[in-house]
Image (cartoon, rainbow, N blue to C red; front, side):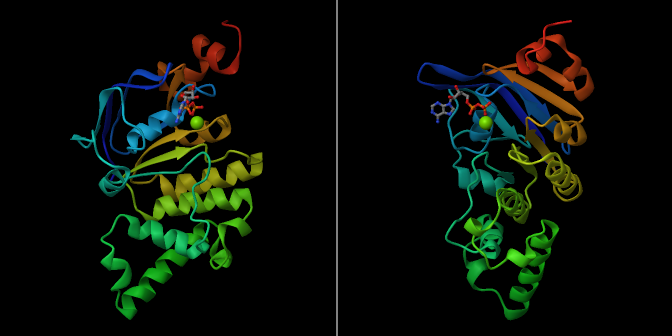
Length: 250
Ligand SMILES: Nc1ncnc2c1ncn2[C@@H]1O[C@H](COP(=O)(O)OP(=O)(O)O)[C@@H](O)[C@H]1O
Ligand SMILES: [Mg+2]
């Protein structure tokens, strides 16, 4: 089930740096928002606040009306928010299969991971192998993340996110370091398997992916939201073009 999100007046500071400055964003259930802006504009900080990894200086985040203030990252994950990290966070000592299995059980009571009947264990295995198959990783199930290419690691991060069956997904530069063909492939996987039935915020510099997945874009610049609207309209906006693409206003 997709979540409604309401971000109200969100601010966050690191010493003298105002990473986010009174940002408002509202998502309807099932809406997919692209979040763009120059490096250092506060995009990842917004995700860190949404997932409880950092605390806001001011403002509120509501998930289906529930105020997330003071909740830990693990509690927030249980409420149905899952993310990928710009600098991948895989479990390096575990196999690819155990990585997705751990992600599935991260939101469930721990006993569920240990007290599965043989039939339930088989069912879980089939389901997780199907998930790895979607990402072209089933043949790598017994490898460790270190044995994967960067592109395969990014796929595994998204498979881990999907294993938790979240209602809000936060993708932080899912196509970073990918070629155009690799970006096209991950775009199709995200469109087919990740977004249906979920709300999403997608941070990405590659406009190829943003334009294909996101009907709406918000733009951050120096911690402030400077535009928010239909993708074509926002990308044509002269202030956005100047701040993000370095183009002169027309
Ligand atoms: N943990 C942190 N400690 C100190 N400064 C940080 C931290 N995280 C982000 N910042 C600063 O906050 C600003 C926004 O960073 P970030 O949210 O990572 O931007 P983006 O993802 O848009 O590139 C930058 O100036 C960055 O240096
Ligand atoms: Mg970032």
